[in-house]
Image (cartoon, rainbow, N blue to C red; front, top):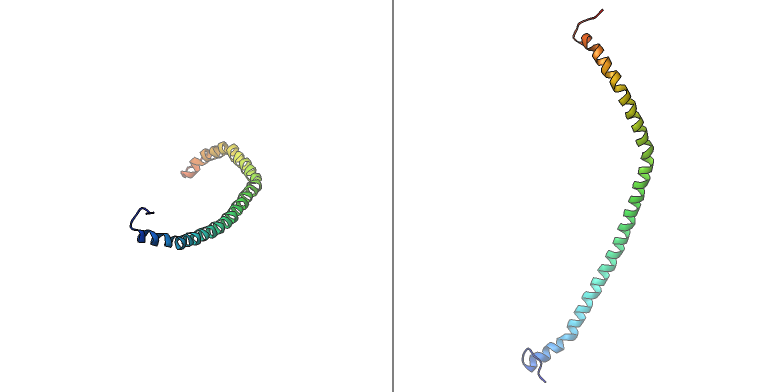
Length: 102
């Protein structure tokens, strides 16, 4: 029986190399499997960290919400004062120019 690819001697040499080649493939697969397992652990730790950050962000939002509401109240106060401040500015305009009114 002749195998394709060359003479009988070459075919037998290639067949004889198969166990060694299979051993190399097996070693490579073990190394890949070890690396994948290591990466899987790392990805799991990273995911846990991301989940913790997400929880921290939500806690921060909850703790900032009252401040946000208070700042809106302060802004509304400024908005109410703005016309009066404009009136004061207009009333003081002659004084700024150095003129005095009686």
